[in-house]
Length: 381
Figure (tube, rainbow, N blue to C red):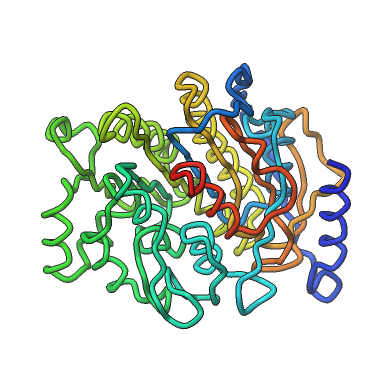
């Protein structure tokens, strides 16, 4: 642990632009405490092979974002209740500082790639992602995100494009993916796609904007695309989409496993922590962090009950160069923060783990290594 903290301090010391850019300050006030969940740790660090892995990516979430949520929530998070953690280096193949597409691809495909590219290597060739690699072994997969489905991180788990901005092309790849479930934004974005893309997706998935739809009971594959109002930022009124959809996706994938000895892979992204930090909006970022922790709680509760599930919580990169101020009153949910950037930073991000083989993710590792470890644990190679 001392080695991890030392390395983190060294990276913080060389944060680009920290002296050159004016600080942008923010504060929280009267954020209601939401409590947290602490598991028993009976299944944590077990040496048996996990059947299921849930990879949770807090987009833009560094240690400061986690600490901000921790202090604003009266000194507790489900995330920080966990015992096992390490650090992840996020650099891309062509840059010290990654973008979400390159880091998402590293997590999805196990290779460092160039910024802005989705699911292709540095020579422009497609790389198999985790859902594609796991499907032949009978392991089912799903995606949940508060971003649009063609966002860089979720797209990395089903698409192969030279530029993350090719939204129409990314949407067109959904139908050919092995995913059994996706929950993302949004109904309006889907309606803007080409008729042939919509038809192809509807042919493979039961597309719905309501998880209470009775027709879902018999669906083999579900595409959940609620209205934009239900996936937008919390400051604009998003409800419990992320934790509720995470719970639904876990239950759906469990019911649709190919056998009791075959499991599932689920990627869950809290995308709007990053968007708040890009805008240097401190309180919205803290609230998004707390919402992400609710989704983490849902995953940890399931892992505790199931006993065969490994949960990994990390980030694609840190955004904003956030630091916390010494003023404020954490006992009242009142803290201050200061951003030094409106962009990503190369600071390593934490990774927390709970469940069988959580110990495999301690120390310092690359985001591509995290992917390869997931592959080895689920496939044995």
